[in-house]
Image (cartoon, rainbow, N blue to C red):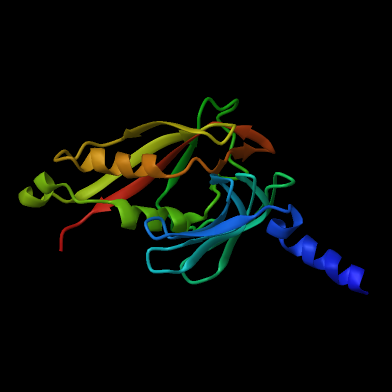
Length: 217
């Protein structure tokens, strides 16, 4: 019986299972809580949690020697599960249906046929509310735009390729006064954690267009 209990404890705790001494880190700037190996404090190892600007849990998962491992879960700002991914098997387990009212647009790049449609949209491994929270936290209204009373919506476009890597960030419209540059700056801060879009199970390059609204009170 003691052996069974010990085996369960080792299985449930990656930190104990791998026999590594770790230190808990609370990063107030990024709202992350995680563990690092004492002998290498750059390597995350063990349980990981990411909280929103308002201290709501957005992501929880595990690291193994600096690499994402095991099951990761993403939540929206209301606490509902939106995405589950198994990094040990490189497998998507669950994703919430896309919001039909979402203003984010997607376009297949170099489609084989004009009739091709995405059977799975590119997915950010952090959830949609992670992106929203990062925008709220990092976006700064340019002084020149504030002084001129300039408001509007910037459409930030970028490519998520078939390997889940992002590139080619640009603005589809030019508002000026530093608004375009600020919207692009914030999107480039997002971690490169995308699953590629699929057409009939085949990964493809997709252009993502995301609006960023600037409004003065």
